[in-house]
Length: 100
Image 1 (cartoon, rainbow, N blue to C red):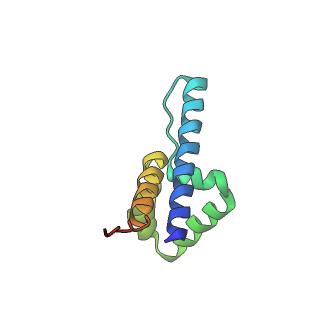
Image 2 (cartoon, rainbow, N blue to C red):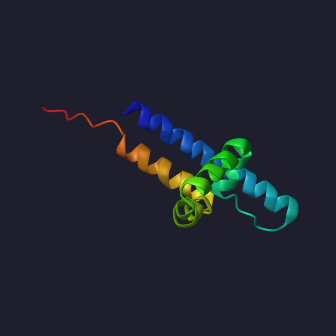
């Protein structure tokens, strides 16, 4: 339970980071350029992203085209925010009942 809450908080923190990044890009360029999950992953570890893509292309190219490609093209902000909120909600502490 505690690990789920920690991961949920980290995901909400990542959503905040993506929000700040998108806001700074908008202020700088005056155009909306939302960060995708693939862009977030490649910003964190470009070599890992390229290695995973090359490995999947060699093993099962349909998996990249129909599975991971569309998922990684999603906007990172709502993805992180929704996943973090779900984790925090599902891993919350149970309420203690007080009997009188």
